[in-house]
Amino acid sequence: MIESVNVIGASGRVGSALSARLRERGIVVREDDAELVLLCVPDRAIAEVAARVAPGPWVAHVSGGTPLTALEPHARRFTLHPLQTFSRDRGAEQIDGAWAAVTGETDEARDVAVGLAATLGLRPFVLADEDRALYHAGAAMASNYLVTLRRAAGELLESASVPPEALEPLMRRVIENGFQLTGPIERGDWETVERHRAAIAAAAPELLEAYEALATVTARDAVARGLSA
Image (cartoon, rainbow, N blue to C red; front, side, top):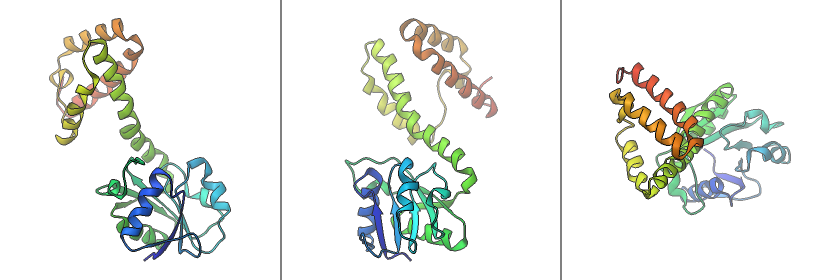
């Protein structure tokens, strides 16, 4: 079990939450002579920062999309990516209930990564390094594009003189209901979908392509699950 950690980037969104949780769990967070150097820095800086770390301790990063090779020349290395979005306005509680992708080249590295995830209160799963880009693309779609979707949908409501924040209880309930599909596509109501297209083309034509792409994917999924025809 790791008993001391040097968190590089401890003032950032992820680094501050992880540092706080490590301290809560009795792990010593210090800059010198730590068993693990945990890089909580922007993806583009990982390789440069890793190269400045003296060999010896375990070295890990928390990026979802950056491969293990960014930690060269270190042999004792792994990655641990909390599958969560973080804010500086909140603390260690952001970690609660989240999953984490861990990657290591040896059994020992994976064991250390899984143990650290458990200490942090994360639910670890092993991710092959070659699958990292695919995994991270899915994570980005679920997190980043939800922001885009909210803003785009809000723009349509604003065009109809409706407060966009009215969408938020609806979006939360979709999650609470386990992402059950409802609405015109689920019912096979293509006339309503066509009315949507016409209204968007008139009021916000820059959003029509996005609406059509999402409708196509949603319809394909609904048909595959026998929800629509």
